[in-house]
Length: 431
Ligand SMILES: *[C@@H]1O[C@H](CO)[C@@H](O)[C@H](O)[C@H]1NC(C)=O
Image (cartoon, rainbow, N blue to C red):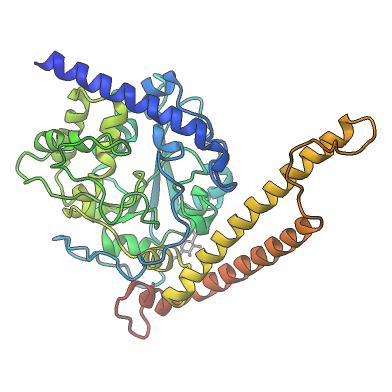
């Protein structure tokens, strides 16, 4: 029975991977420019077998996360965590933070020191960079299995009694499509701007503000049909019973994707250390592939740290209260992303124009007369349009930058952050 199940899982994984690779190959052309710095390319067999990096560093098997947030911004799902709201330090106090990163030897994590060196020197930021495939590394998990899950749990278990005010769990790469667009997809920027007050108050904060993929619903643990872009869905019910034997299976599990989050010390300690040990034991024992166990946890972390199955705060609140980028209203927030979308479209138009122009230039160069042969079937780009497009792109880029600067300014006001998060604010309150 067990062997049959294992074979089934293996075949399921294999076909998912093949589909995934196929999709990647046909969709690369459509990748927006800002996305995937250094992260292009389908998963190799080696990557499939290694615990890191995981497949989520690739473009997801769906369209680009919509930069436009319309329809979502007001509708942050009420987060009904039974845990108490965290107690803040007096306004103006410092919070200690530790950045926990799982990495492989081949990965470059020098950005941590290079970009955040000032915070490290001043003692406000510690880092714990695990190297999963180096037996001589100072920090490494007991087993190279289960992607980042093993490292995150190992950090918590080994530091349970000496945690920083805030623990930040992130992947090793600096840029990734699943980071926040307003922070240019830059992990360093996210760490720098992250509000320790919001993390302390909420206890748990998903570092990704954008809902897609993951919110407002994602996994339906009861599903009997296997979903192509959610290969873990039908496995969750079985895993759930093993990981949370006392808790009924939620009908939906949802939070923004990709397993990067920050947790307060108090919130981590809401569960006894032994609980993290037993979850890690499950990970060590499970016969699921690293890919699937990682995917299962992507939508389970919020349950561990909030005891709530759905964690989908409003994007505007996440950006404003979480990172100090406040637009002052949901409409202005939407406008920024609409402008950004418009710029992406113009970028694409310009690329098309340039490609057509290049075809013509090549035909001219090849022909003896220096003319495009009459029989050539080509689309002739309209003269001068490239300049018009460049000017428009330039204007929009400047507007985006201007608006972002204004949002940073507004976010320096703690009252604005409270407004953005929809919480009460009194004169003299800090962030
Ligand atoms: C916070 O940390 C910075 C950098 O170490 C230090 O200069 C500042 O005095 C600290 N503030 C408080 C209130 O401790």
